[in-house]
Image (cartoon, rainbow, N blue to C red):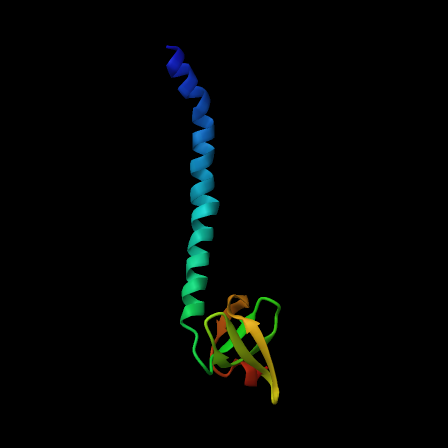
Length: 95
């Protein structure tokens, strides 16, 4: 009887953990996995938006860093994981 009461007192905590897992942890892990796969699939010439709001075209790619052209003759070197979104081709010209 006492063991059953102890289990019943932990039941709300178990339910809260399960809810947290399915509503917060699991979607966040999926989003991180999607971001990693997007960053690994980048190639030269892709138009991207960074988490800072800067948009540009990829000129060179390395393992950790990329060079982005933000305007004619203006290039910046960034960390690849700061790339937030892959933009459709022609986005930069349309802005």
